[in-house]
Length: 369
Image (cartoon, rainbow, N blue to C red):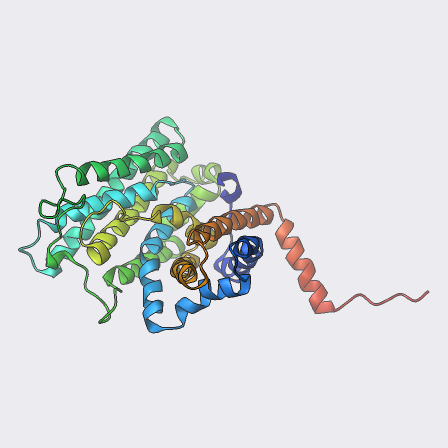
């Protein structure tokens, strides 16, 4: 994947107009045999996956709730990838942010929400950045591949969560492996009555907007993108590559850590072993499908949230395994990476250009004998 994405300079328009629709179409074609094998019609299956979740207010709000953590992790991964830092550790950074939020949430009970919530967010961001610091330093100081180190730290973070929940943080009342409930002032407010949509969704959108502004409108963003596109040229132009990578890694980890805060403060209200269903790994799908652009990340995150809610609906109504949704997500990632590779080598652009010219000029005239 690293070689396929290195030097990737797709603009927002290409990512949204070509990459995302084509990836979805090819994924639907490739996964249709799996839906048929499960005993359902592919058309009906994708209607349940993509359309039904948007057909009522309740399920639409659930799509937004499901999208919230992967909007955070998608933005975190996309930011790091744009800098040429291959952060595969958003899952572990999210879990560390959740640990910090669960800890801070029990300490701020005497504070009003206006003071408690920033402390929760700040603690989660620091924990996520702290978990990302080690691999980042290994990369910039010793040249050790961050793909390996960030990936290997994910199960370590999960082990840390389980150690806390089966040890000092076990709920003393129920005896279940979960932490105590956080204070009411530390919980994200609900945005709409009788729904689970909470403040975390708004924070995710604000972070995506702020990241877009920094990447596209500031000198720091220019340096970060230059470091990702051509480190040698950026270094020649005076960009401190090591410093840029370190900053990108820490900000990426902080954003992923806030995703953990969002889950603790917005939906779970405590630390649990099943707090994340692979949100950090799904963020890689979201970032890649969005073409490493922030508008693309927003749309891809909503799409994957739609798919996650639809997978549950399809399992209930069609009797297909809920794991089919995971197969679709994995296929979507592979198809997107393949399309990026084809574009990098000019194959996809030539193919699309040929189709466009054929449509514009019409069929070639027949030559009479």
